[in-house]
Length: 281
Image 1 (spheres, rainbow, N blue to C red):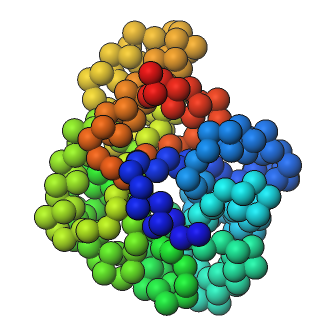
Image 2 (cartoon, one colour; image 1 turned 120 degrees about the horizontal axis):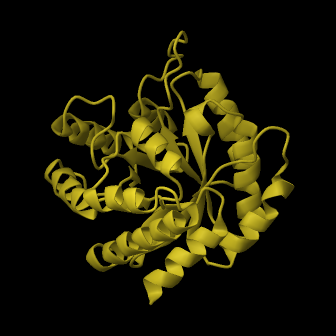
């Protein structure tokens, strides 16, 4: 099923997971997938890898397992900046064999010393995929992409992705919902009329948040700063507070827009479960 069908109902819920690392097989994630399946997500997305340079075979294999063994709609991430057209075609064929109909088209991280192999931007991959019978999603950035000079340019690039064939957007993580609502206004003014799904990552540890902020350029609101300061030497308390904070974000988002939420689970179904339980209270 094409993921865009989910947006015919209000507030679909989806999760992101990453493939097993190193020599681990898909079997290592059975418990994770069983836990997520129990939460009845509308779809699960599978990352290409940390840094966007990993083994596409594991992404395809895991997406296929989710779709065909777990009975959950799956979306495979696909990065392009260092990929040739024949490499993209090979991945496309593998996805078709697994009956995967949904792709999140991404540029991927630029590796120092390696040149682009033909796809410089995500919009180039989106245009390439258009007409190949996939439902194509794209990323968006509530606070602007770290490589983008202005929020206005960022909105324009988002429109270019839509014009190239993106059918929906999933946002990068953020910790201040007001920033997301202002972003929605900018996007709509730029002519974005496709669904925009907010992406939420719970704060589980201080070093995790610091790393994400460095990688993504997300800002840290005062409420998060206070939590980090209050529980600096109490990791379990910080974890609980982070889950509560994410649940508050999710509850507010579900009440104020209708595209649902996409939870970055970090392969921890218990975290996703607790967030949804607290949201329903």
